[in-house]
Length: 454
Ligand code: NAP
Image 1: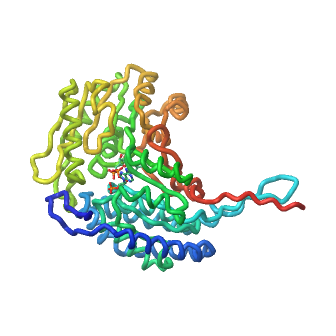
Image 2 (image 1 turned 60 degrees about the horizontal axis):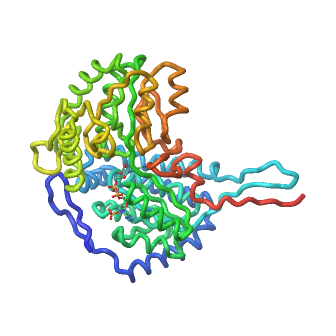
């Protein structure tokens, strides 16, 4: 098997890599195991120093890595620069706060009791292509700080990013083998999970991949975190600042060419403001600039892969055939490459793909809610439960949303976004476990209870 790095803007093959042989995988796992045995005894200062150095390298080379992401998966270059900067700030956050987040926690008993957060071992990290740097660094930084090792199986279409991250971590001063990229296909993942040198697995990706990896981890009795897809609601209620909701909604739907797990996907709008929202939102989506992702004026670049472009085309075609109405777009863009026109769908029946499936591209679904209760009902009418954004200044409505929306994240009057200080993760088919923040820092640790009789 070979991994091809293909530029989605024009279809050029940029590089090809062979899959590692079983012998090479064995050598890398053995080296990772040897490295972990030393690394687990490292101090918080040593771990923080490697993360600070990685942050320094990321910042000084941010344009190099952003350009690589643009070439390999079509992310607009400016967004790539911001992604690399966020990786750096996340390394710094865990370097600065790791010793506090992982400090012994005393517990009041009649003895001297406490919790200690110890390294768990080598984590297998199975990652998607959509934020090829961010997804890796958001689990790598807390793993390093906790004294764990990590082997990365990145998505097959971003092998250059995978090797670039390994290069950065080697130059960060991390001992060789603490972080390793494994160029292997998804068919080899279960074997790596079963390997006794692997302690746990974290996967960010689709439901199908989550089910396979979760099953393999379950069979091997290993800890597993799953960060899966979403069909996030963006609810607009009568007290919303409509212009701000429209502008933020467009951004929330189209960031990363519409390929983010927490993109706003279903716009659920109260009937009192529906018509005004529909008109302004459709006009704003129709005016987005589609083009070369290296160009700073571009707002929407290509879909990352040909398969992805075909999926979004099928989902929209089937939805329109099933009764949905395209208010703008509704077809691939006329450019060559994997471009899809920014699209707004209305009157979407509940049995078509645009209602039930995750749309990974610049396609928004508008829904009219008759009242607040109906808005919540529509928001929860999905098997997913990742993010949710609600536009209201009514305190009672906010309280009800906090309790009643079935999601891992609810943001008011703002788009959903990750932040190293805030735990991130989903419920329902969006997965389980948390990354980032205090919970993410401790997710892959052996939480040891220690009691000393006094
Ligand atoms: P994907 O096809 O599921 O792939 C994700 C990773 O899993 C890749 O490394 C892939 O390897 C691997 N994989 C796929 N099938 C597997 C299997 N059966 N066994 C083991 N590994 C397997 O997802 P994607 O297309 O890269 O990413 C898009 C999805 O990720 C969307 O659903 C998105 O919402 C979700 N996502 C979620 C979050 C979150 O935080 N919740 C964040 C970002 C993305 P190959 O590339 O070799 O197939």
